[in-house]
Structure formats: structure tokens, C-alpha cells
Amino acid sequence: MIYLIGGEKGGSGKSCIAQNFAVALKRRDHDVLLVDADPQLTTFTWVKERSKNDKLQHIPCVQLHNSGADAESLEAVEDVRKTLQDLKKRYQTIVIDAGGQDSEALRAAMTVADRMIIPLRPKRRDLKTLLKMRKLVAMATAVNPKLIARSVLTQCPPSNKSINKQVVNKRVQGAKDICESFEIPALNSFIVMRNAYDDSDEAGCAVFEGPDSVDEKAIEEIEEMTKEILEI
Image 1: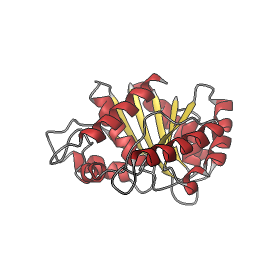
Image 2 (image 1 turned 135 degrees about the vertical axis):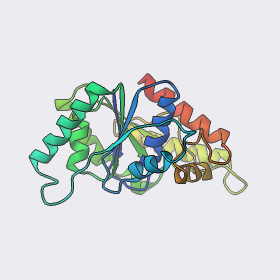
Image 3 (image 1 turned 60 degrees about the vertical axis):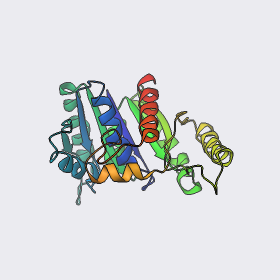
């Protein structure tokens, strides 16, 4: 299976989702390969940091992105397609971090992926990208009928003294309704803004792994998200 984590809007935590999802799959004994298709190499750098800690499960990662004058060429797109098709023969599960932009690499990955997860913050500037993403998904499924796209809400505000749970739930549900209206339904589970995600990322870890302590609520969020994705 190829799981593509991508979308048009940057800053919504795509790399975080890809990394934690990959570790969650590894904990389920999947043979996982991470593919970093983002020129920023966020996930590739995370894996390099992770490799320094012998206590963490090894997850291989390859770079796959185009830069330079030929990045948008048909030849470059076909190279991405062929590379992913070849990797699919060698790994049980591939998780692609496609970064936060509409690129030819993203479009090429959509033509071979089995599932696409689009992380979105429950904010207007993120949700308005759904119109374009719906068009891209429609174009991709014309050549790749097996592709199923879902959105996942990320960086949702935590309920606290200033924002009660009812207000948070209303905001999240409103965002889910918008996703549904654009035919890219949101997962029931959603990710709350927590320090655990940043802290673990800096150490090459997932939220299951520390580095110093674990946040049980963050773990529950990733577990619920992973279970939902696997059931699609």
C-alpha cells in the first residue's frame, strides 16, 4: 500500500503526520518505507536524527523530489511514477511525505497511491484549498481509480480555561462539514495542538517514544488516526 500525505497548504503538519503514522505502522510490524518528496527534506532530516538513537526502530527513508529547470517536465513526473511503482514492489507499506504545495511530484504520486491523507487545520485559509484538492483528486482518480482521499484535521485548539470543549468541538465539526461538502471527508479522529508533537519531532521520535516522557493523549490521537486510515 502507498499512503500519500500531502496537500496544497503548508504548515498543517504533513511531515508530523507522515512520521507518526510510519512509526505507528512499524509498531504493527509493517515493513515501512518513508519517502520524502518535499524539497525541504523535513522527514529525511528527522530520520537522520532518529538513526542516532539505537533504541528506536529503524525506518528507511529515501528522497524523492524534483528541483531545477526540469522539475515540472513530463519526464520528471514519469520518473516519480516509475520510482514509486518500483518501490512498491519491494516494500509492504510506503508512506510519502509530499510537503505543502501543489507540485508535479505530488500529482505524480497521486496517480500511484492507494490512499491520500490531506492534513488541514480548522482554519479558513486551509479549508479553502479543498476546492483545488477536489479537482486534483478527480484528475488523479481518472487514471488511478483505487485512490481514496480523506482529510484529517490537525493542530486543533486544545480545550482549556479560555476555550471550553464545546467550542472546540463546534469548530472541529464545522471544519469536518466543509470537508464533507468538498467530497474529501475528514476522519473522525483529529489531532490537537500539543507540545509532544514538536518535542518528539526534534529528537527523531514519534509521540510513542518520548524523548523524555510521553503524552498519552497524543498517543491516543495517533492510534485512532492510524486505525481509521487502515480501515479505509
